[in-house]
Image (cartoon, rainbow, N blue to C red; front, top):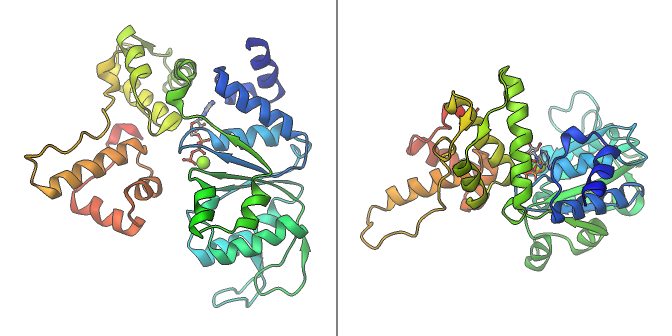
Length: 323
Ligand SMILES: Nc1ncnc2c1ncn2[C@@H]1O[C@H](COP(=O)(O)OP(=O)(O)OP(=O)(O)O)[C@@H](O)[C@H]1O
Ligand SMILES: [Mg+2]
């Protein structure tokens, strides 16, 4: 395993990809195999597991490495904007389109287009994107001339796309075009050796950015890291270590500095204050999502606007040390 890890890591910029657990090595192995081809890849995994890390790994190990890597998060933009970002537009395509603008498909020419949270694409964008995968063609909004799409597509999702298809939220034909080659990234809690390797790598990096030697971990800190559930996966781990590295001062991180919160406790029968329960739940989910609002909103089943409203109502803000 060790030598395979080294071989795979040396194929690319090894500093960026940490981990040698069985599940992670399987991911890198599949990624390296598919990298050499032009095949569309679907990466699935919980939020913060490293889907973008793997997408970049594939790009760097592929014949398109000299071309751009263009990432677009389908959940971050309203429907209309997503389409104009993706496909670009001609002058006068809609009110405000005073200049023609190329889309990300054009910008990714000869490179890789990474579509994050692909399950969030609107039906209209899905239909247009299907054409990119099927015909290798697209049109700018308001355009009349079809253009060649010279992109390799890597899509990512933290939702079960198959279920979205069953519910009728995602086109089946697009689903099959995307999941030609799928790679599932295991949650961090299922690969404990990676927890320790990643911690060491992150502490080195954090130390360097602070201009200090890397902080160490006490035995109870290691145990706490291994026991924790990591709902926010690698991103949550990095944030927890950064916070702890600030708090520990003396250079040794204990479990106390990590202050890893247990999962939301079941509501006790005597709790009657609903808004208190709501506040605590939102706070917990925000922490678990490393204060990523679109992810937290999804987990809570709220729209982002609703979540913003609740954060204001309960005066919840990101703790200053977790930058
Ligand atoms: N194996 C790894 N080695 C080094 N850093 C990693 C690794 N996996 C994840 N990370 C880091 O963890 C963070 C989250 O990773 P990434 O953005 O790739 O996750 P994601 O699955 O795309 O998350 P999301 O679903 O929220 O988009 C990033 O800062 C990334 O650099
Ligand atoms: Mg991502």
